[in-house]
Length: 424
Ligand code: ADP
Ligand code: MG
Image (cartoon, rainbow, N blue to C red):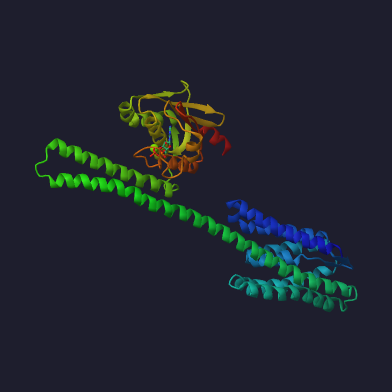
C-alpha cells in the first residue's frame, strides 16, 4: 500500500507542473486544455503503473483523481478523451476487473458530463469542495458495489483497501481542488497587478502629458493675442509671432504623437521587406535641414555591393532613426559628425548612430527612456522612450554607449531577412 504515497505525489507534481506551464508562456496558456489532457493522461498512466492493490484481476489506484480534475477544469472534451484513454489502458492490463471499471467509469462519466461539468464553474469554492468530496467518495463506493454485483462477493478485496480508498479519494481530491483554486487565485491577482500597473503608468503619463501640452498652448495663445490686439502690427513682426505660435503648436502635437505611439505601440504594424540603406537615405534627407542649421555633417557608411534587408514597419523604422538622429544632432550644438554605419552582425543587420556630441554620464544613461527625462530646455524626454518601446515591439535590440563630452553611439539590431527566411 506504499504506492498510495507515490500516487498522491504523481498527482500533486502534475498539478504544479501544469501551473508552471501556464504561467511561463502565453502559448501554454492559450492551449491550456491540451496541457491539461497531456498531464492528466500522464498521471493516469503513472498511477496505473504504481497500483495500490493488484490481485485476482482487481487493480486499484488513484487514476480517478487526475481524470476528475481534468473533467472539472478542462470540460467535456477533456473528460471524454481521458476516460477513453484510461479504459484502453485498463483493457491492456486485463482481468475481469476491467468490466467493473468500464461500467463504473461509464456511469460516472454520464454524471460528470451532463450534471457536474456544466455547473462546476459557477459554484462557490465551498460548494466545489463539498460536491467534489461526495463525488470522490461516490466513485469507489460505486466501484466496490458493482464489483460485488459482478462477482457476487467482495472477498478478494481486503476491507482495509476499501477504507484506504475512501479516505485517500476524499482527502486528495479536496486537497488538490483547494490547491488548484489557490494557485488560480494567486495567478489572477498577479495578472491584475500587471494590468493595473500598466494602466497606472499610462494614466500618470496622461496627466503629465496634459501638463506638458499646456505650456506650448499658453505660449501660442499669448502670441495670437499679441497679433490680434495690435491692429497696426508690421507684417514682419506679425509673421514672427505667428511663426513662433506655430512652432509651439508643433511641439504640442509632437508630444501627443509620441505619447500615442507609446500607449499603442501594437497598433497597425505593417511589416514589409525594407532595404536599410534606402530607408536611411530617406531619413537623412529629412534630417538634413536640421543638421545644416547645427553645422552637423551626416555620413552614411556601409559595405559596397552588400544588401541589408530587414522585415520591419517602414514608418516606425523611420521614426526610430529620426528620433535617435535628432538627439544626436541636438547633442552637437556647435557642430560635429553624425555617422550612421550599417553592417552585418551574424544573423542581424546592425545600424550604429554615433555622434561627437556632449555625451551622457552613467546617471543620465540610466534615466534615458523614462518619460520627461530631458536635459534640454524645450525637450520632452519622450523621444527615446518611444524608440525603446518601438524597437521592442519590432523584435529588435538596442544598446547605448556614451562618454561625457566625447559622444554617444546607439546600436540597433534587427534580424536580417535571409536569416528570417531560413529560420521560419
Ligand atoms: P528630448 O530629446 O526631448 O530631450 P529624448 O527622450 O529624445 O527627449 O532624450 C532624452 C534625453 O536624453 C535628452 O534630453 C538628452 O539629455 C539625452 N540624450 C539622448 N540622446 C542623446 C545623445 N545622442 N547624446 C547626448 N545625450 C542624449
Ligand atoms: Mg529627442
